[in-house]
Image (cartoon, rainbow, N blue to C red; front, side, top):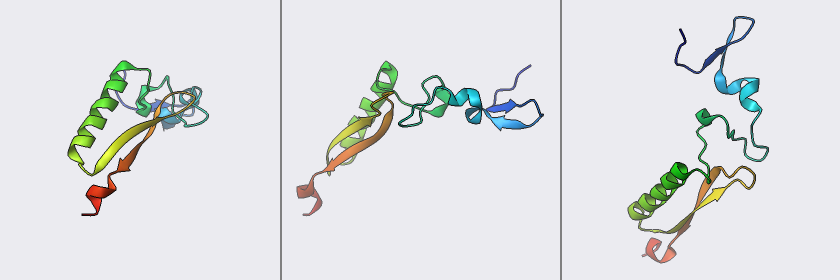
Length: 97
Protein backbone atom coordinates (compact mmCIF):
# COMPACT_ATOMS: atom_id res chain seq x y z
CA UNK A 1 0.00 0.00 0.00
CA UNK A 2 1.42 3.39 -0.99
CA UNK A 3 0.86 6.78 0.52
CA UNK A 4 -0.22 9.76 -1.53
CA UNK A 5 2.35 12.32 -0.43
CA UNK A 6 5.56 13.88 -1.71
CA UNK A 7 7.94 11.84 0.46
CA UNK A 8 10.50 9.35 -0.84
CA UNK A 9 12.25 6.89 1.45
CA UNK A 10 16.02 6.61 0.98
CA UNK A 11 18.09 3.47 1.59
CA UNK A 12 19.28 4.84 4.92
CA UNK A 13 15.68 5.03 6.15
CA UNK A 14 15.50 8.82 5.93
CA UNK A 15 12.69 10.58 4.06
CA UNK A 16 13.22 13.30 1.46
CA UNK A 17 10.79 15.43 -0.55
CA UNK A 18 10.23 14.00 -4.03
CA UNK A 19 11.30 17.15 -5.90
CA UNK A 20 14.70 17.16 -4.15
CA UNK A 21 15.74 13.69 -5.30
CA UNK A 22 18.32 13.03 -8.02
CA UNK A 23 15.70 11.57 -10.37
CA UNK A 24 13.65 14.76 -10.21
CA UNK A 25 16.65 16.96 -11.08
CA UNK A 26 17.72 15.02 -14.19
CA UNK A 27 15.32 16.80 -16.57
CA UNK A 28 15.81 20.34 -15.22
CA UNK A 29 16.20 23.19 -17.69
CA UNK A 30 19.61 24.88 -17.53
CA UNK A 31 18.20 28.41 -17.95
CA UNK A 32 15.14 28.45 -15.69
CA UNK A 33 15.29 25.27 -13.58
CA UNK A 34 11.87 23.91 -14.58
CA UNK A 35 11.47 20.19 -15.14
CA UNK A 36 9.30 19.12 -18.08
CA UNK A 37 8.92 15.56 -16.80
CA UNK A 38 7.86 16.49 -13.28
CA UNK A 39 4.44 18.13 -13.25
CA UNK A 40 4.68 18.68 -9.46
CA UNK A 41 7.03 21.61 -10.03
CA UNK A 42 4.03 23.67 -11.14
CA UNK A 43 5.48 24.62 -14.50
CA UNK A 44 3.28 26.12 -17.20
CA UNK A 45 4.51 25.40 -20.71
CA UNK A 46 3.79 27.21 -23.96
CA UNK A 47 3.32 24.09 -26.09
CA UNK A 48 0.64 22.51 -23.85
CA UNK A 49 -2.85 23.47 -24.92
CA UNK A 50 -4.40 23.48 -21.43
CA UNK A 51 -1.55 25.62 -20.06
CA UNK A 52 -1.85 28.12 -22.90
CA UNK A 53 -5.59 28.39 -22.28
CA UNK A 54 -4.90 29.12 -18.58
CA UNK A 55 -2.39 31.83 -19.52
CA UNK A 56 -4.78 33.49 -21.96
CA UNK A 57 -7.63 33.36 -19.43
CA UNK A 58 -5.39 34.88 -16.74
CA UNK A 59 -4.29 37.72 -19.06
CA UNK A 60 -7.88 38.50 -20.04
CA UNK A 61 -9.07 38.53 -16.41
CA UNK A 62 -6.09 40.65 -15.34
CA UNK A 63 -6.71 43.29 -18.02
CA UNK A 64 -10.42 43.41 -17.15
CA UNK A 65 -9.76 43.87 -13.42
CA UNK A 66 -6.92 46.41 -13.72
CA UNK A 67 -8.06 49.23 -15.98
CA UNK A 68 -4.75 51.13 -15.59
CA UNK A 69 -2.82 48.31 -17.25
CA UNK A 70 -2.42 48.87 -20.98
CA UNK A 71 -1.06 45.47 -21.99
CA UNK A 72 0.30 42.22 -20.60
CA UNK A 73 2.86 39.90 -22.19
CA UNK A 74 3.93 36.46 -20.99
CA UNK A 75 7.70 35.83 -21.02
CA UNK A 76 8.75 32.26 -21.84
CA UNK A 77 12.04 30.43 -21.30
CA UNK A 78 13.91 30.26 -24.61
CA UNK A 79 15.06 26.69 -24.06
CA UNK A 80 12.10 24.76 -22.54
CA UNK A 81 9.24 27.22 -23.21
CA UNK A 82 8.06 27.40 -19.57
CA UNK A 83 6.37 30.53 -18.24
CA UNK A 84 8.81 32.80 -16.40
CA UNK A 85 6.80 35.96 -15.73
CA UNK A 86 4.32 38.46 -17.11
CA UNK A 87 5.45 41.88 -18.37
CA UNK A 88 2.81 44.59 -17.81
CA UNK A 89 2.70 48.03 -19.44
CA UNK A 90 0.91 50.72 -17.45
CA UNK A 91 -1.25 53.40 -19.06
CA UNK A 92 0.35 56.53 -17.63
CA UNK A 93 -2.50 58.80 -18.77
CA UNK A 94 -4.92 56.89 -16.54
CA UNK A 95 -2.44 56.66 -13.66
CA UNK A 96 -1.83 60.40 -13.21
CA UNK A 97 -5.24 62.08 -13.39
